[in-house]
Length: 85
Image (tube, rainbow, N blue to C red):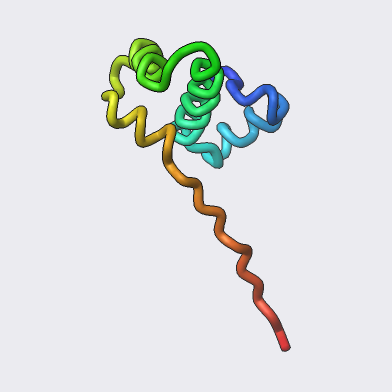
């Protein structure tokens, strides 16, 4: 079982349910963790140093990839409604 890296946001049982039913994207969780870690590191280091520290933690990701993850704008879709009348 994958460890719940979203403990501050959802309970272990909900996380387990989402993983079990393939409702949680592993890449999305990783990207979320990278953004959170960047915010923490940015308080202590410059932007470049923070990204380099993240690159040490995620050696399989290139500098540009981490930068894109950090600065990616999230688009929230408005709910689509179906009206009967």
